[in-house]
Amino acid sequence: MNLATLAEPQCLFRRITPHDNSAIARVIRQVSAEYGLTADKGYTVADPDLDELYQVYSKPGHAFWVVEMDGVVVGGGGIAPLLCSQPDICELQKMYFSSVVRGKGLAKQLALQAIEYARDQGFKQCYLETTAFLKEAIGLYEHLGFVHIDEPLGCTGHVDCEVRMLKPL
Image (cartoon, rainbow, N blue to C red; front, side, top):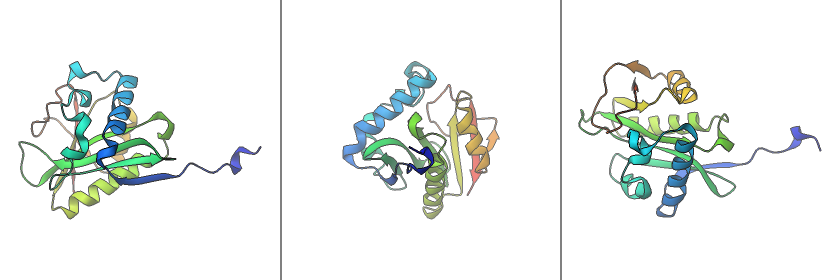
């Protein structure tokens, strides 16, 4: 069999539904464990709403998309107003993808979709926090025009996310 003739699995981007809560939480926990991002360090796995992302992202100015491959949730990410900040700053949040789909451009596609949504909502800047462990993610964010900033913005609670970036929209 010629591997070049095998079709790439089809991926579907869609807004989160209540039925996706456990699946996307599982992806986030799996990827976090893979990179050593533990709850005691204040990473996403410590968020009390991790198992209720549909409810969190159903509020005005919020959006979360899941990525499905062959009917299985394999990743996702969202956008929300940055808490304790100026009202025109949003935050790119919870961008996590299973290892089976990394390197296929899906994170870039989702981030661009989230940025477009943020612009449509009237946000002027997009903030994010991550960690130096996620080198590929940092490279993507830099490619998308995010610049490193020294001080954290808002009150995200992610105290060990030492990489902070901001992008004008």
